[in-house]
Length: 438
View 1: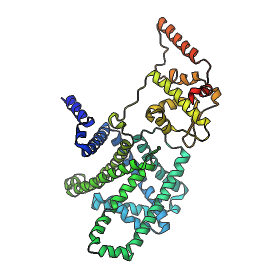
View 2: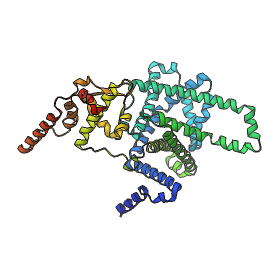
View 3: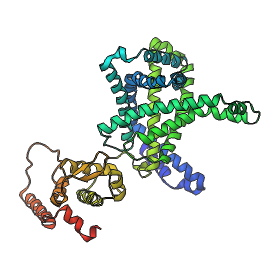
View 4: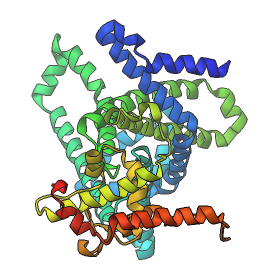
């Protein structure tokens, strides 16, 4: 019965029944498919598991992270203007949110370099950076990225985000403060016709800030190219879900007297953990929507491990090396995983295991900017070496030597000899010299 219902649901979601209603039907089908895909991913458990991991990381790093940011804001004289925004972040917790924020601010104000010392300050900076690293790993999972940023690049970019992001906040706060004191701003507020519209728009500002923050994270955090339109779609979806969840959670906290009675003094900790978990889950859901918008081919298949035939693996390994070699010869061209995926029209998760094997064999290497180049002189890379990566290496069988039947062993040897006879001693350089390679 369950199988039949699922089959009917799949047919309705992925069929064209809604397309007969024109544009509204197409929009409805797109929303329904994204909703179906996101629910499927949540049920699979990985998004919830990573959200829980980020809650744990947040508890460890929230004080160092806020202290680092507020130290920069304090130097610029804007730390007092930033405090209300921190209170608004935990606003769904009601009075408990104010209490938690007060405690965090007390801890932050007690932190200074002379008290911590060199080791303590270094630990605080490390904890703040590790928080950003965990977020990157979660976004990389959503975007099917298995290779993180290099350590040097990660350190520079993370510190830049912490410092420049704080500076951007201070500039925004200063601009808002100066506009609030402006005569035009006051006149627009008091105007009988413009005033209601202006006030309604100003109330939307916190939601617009959340959407902007989500969009920035979706563009910057994954170690891949995310288009602005995709990040904005995910930011709008995530921001709307977060705002809605905040209203519902506030109602839950206000009416959850029984919960506070049962857990007593632990209630504030339980409520905080739940809200942090929901916030991280919503952030990852928005990223998942941005991914599906940019890669609609994954909507139906979801996160399935790629399975390639032996023949496909051989062709893929040869074609990867051919594409990388051609880009290396062209001084004005470079190629990375995303460009390779687009050129071959094969999803990057399918290519990555082959790339890993080629890199481990020294046939391929990645530069600091993640561009792919040959691992050695292409005249010294034989096609036999390339095929050997997918034909003979990477086995994870038992430690005992298998006992083949004599006729199978003989047949396999003939196949190997036939492959060796076909490619001979041909190298990657000679393959690139083939007129058909152009």
